[in-house]
Length: 258
Image (cartoon, rainbow, N blue to C red; front, side):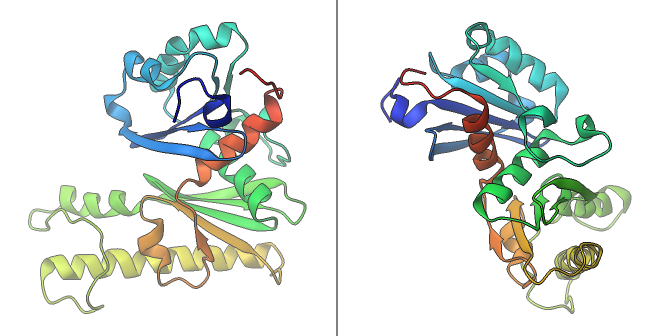
């Protein structure tokens, strides 16, 4: 990817989440390269090394301390009007009592699903927490659900018991565990699918049981949990960054030389 090429890297898109930070160099139409780093390891220098001169930067963050480092690192871009921090005023169609309380990543996910797949829709994001974000038939963000993430649940068992090991979630061989580890895997994965299935069922009911409801999954364990959940139609690993690209297109003016 040639440095400074507007066709390949007009944007730098940064999504700071609790566990990992994803960033991508992007054109207006396509994510060109996606990288992922542990959020805890990021410094001001780390953020500065992501950006190229002249790029327009859209930042999404749910970690305020790291967002402050990023804003400091991107100050030269901000001085030229080339830096935006994602907020509800940049995302269209928010019907929610306190829009400022919506996580930036959730707004990006909603924007991506609305643009790429349509509405009504539900985004299931399997991160440190699992979040469900709902778009009405009109395409407005109307609310969501937050539950513990899969690793948070399994780590809790390890931390709060004397004999249970820490496990890495994977597809269990059977619903009947023949060892402590396999029993934990069965409880975690099958149980988590039950949690997701029931929440989606209740959301569908409250939306009026629409005949066509787009349910899109993203996040670290999306592929694992969705593999045997017919309610989830598609897994999109870079949905949040796609949403940032779409929002950047709506809020940065089109120019020949970014």
